Image (tube, rainbow, N blue to C red; front, side, top):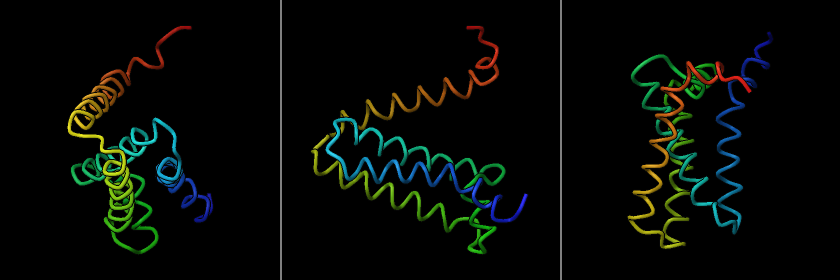
Length: 124
């Protein structure tokens, strides 16, 4: 695989997530704050996991581009955090919204992590 293909494949996931957050931030869609929050929380969690264990997509891509492992994390988490805070303030969502969103996000991540070994064993 060429260097450009490796960079493209590595950048695809984080780039799409950031594009989803930007599109949601520009929309008047009812669920836009949830999409932005999920992208922000997902990128922040990816940074944390990358710090604890092996580098993930952003860290690998950042290293490939010569920026060091944390530059793209700073950009993606910073941008999505900014978009979320801006939308949160605009819509006056409140602490209950944050608590419910955090609980739902945590539950979803827990189900994916602990269900990962079983997901492909399901028979439809």
